[in-house]
Image 1 (cartoon, rainbow, N blue to C red):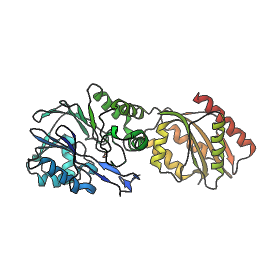
Image 2: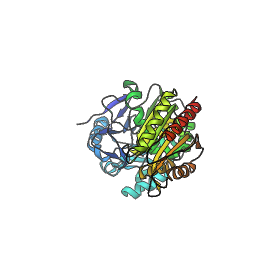
Image 3: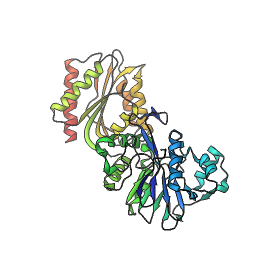
Image 4: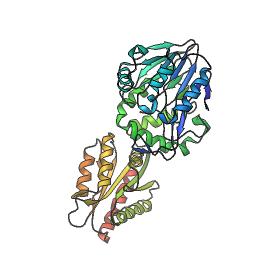
Amino acid sequence: MQNSVCIADRLYWIGGNDRRLSLFESAFPVPRGVSYNAYVLTDEKTVLFDTVDEAVSDVFFEGLEHVLAGRPLDYVVVHHMEPDHAANLRRLTEKYPSAELIVNQKTAAMICQYFGVCPCRMRQVKEGDTLETGTHILRFLFAPMVHWPEVMLTYDETSGTLFSADAFGTFGALNGNIFADELDFERDYLDEARRYYTNIVGKYGAQVQAVLKKAAGKEISMICPLHGPVWRENIGWYVGKYATWSSYQPEENGVVIFYASVYGHTQNAAEILAFALGKAGVRNVRMYDVSVTDVSELVAEAFRFSHLVFAATTYNNGVFVNMENFLSDLKAHNFRGRKFALVENGSWAPVAGNCMAEQLSAMKDMTQIGEKVTVLSSVKEEQAAALRALAETIAADLK
Ligand code: FEO
């Protein structure tokens, strides 16, 4: 049964939610599910903005049929070719044989690669081109690498609506409220929005900044992303989050201690440091055992905070593998611009500190503060004192 929602004059959401998916893109846990959004504009011409993932195809097609109410589908704007949005393109072109696909050059090539749809079904647009649909004028803005090279956005000049593709999306299914102002976004979605942004698009901060620059000159009344709630209030606040994340600036002053511990001694060192930070007046301290926390959450928390501590045991004459993977993932996301401190452990040849320093030095604008603390097997008073001194240094730097 269709489940479309009218979100503005002649504009409808026809997406769906998946709460059974365990790994989005086969990589990221989505314990709160994920929504796949598609939109239909029923102007003098009818326009569909994107399709949805295979998981919610049926409700999508039912919603489309309901909203069109017997009218033909004139245009399909394809913002992004990743299959969580484009999976139904072939079926759509077969079901609506007169629909014209509005694409760019890169999209056209990918549609042929994925589906073998005849180029005769496509109209190619260039940056800034417009499409008039009756009372609405749609302008196409390219957003390469947000999150694939073919991505484009549509700005509806008539209503001020920005169809933003993956940008401004979030993990987390929609649970009855479509609009961000109808729910407690900060409480229920912000952590997932950050995890979504940093892990999916985090590598492409410069490209996101370019899109924000393009959008800055436009009056935006509503943002319709491909995942998560639609924005019609407090848009500046959310755009501000994107400005912070994409410039790799910390969102909060505070300390995150990431530790990898095999038998608990490195954890003990991390805890002594954490409690010393608390005693020194630091009120924003987080701790994560990298062996039991999904790396997507670790990446998001690293983007969030200003001061990071990496504590790891030595393993195979290097760094414990989960810490090594985490640091490698941070590098892959172009992570940069943080203060960091190091704690290492080793029973005969501690090298984890130098190995972590090497990985961190491959990232831009990373500054080590305090002395590296070396633990030999278990923490003794000498190392506890060094950890307390490190905490004082971090606390002073935070001020
Ligand atoms: Fe939601 Fe890049 O696809």
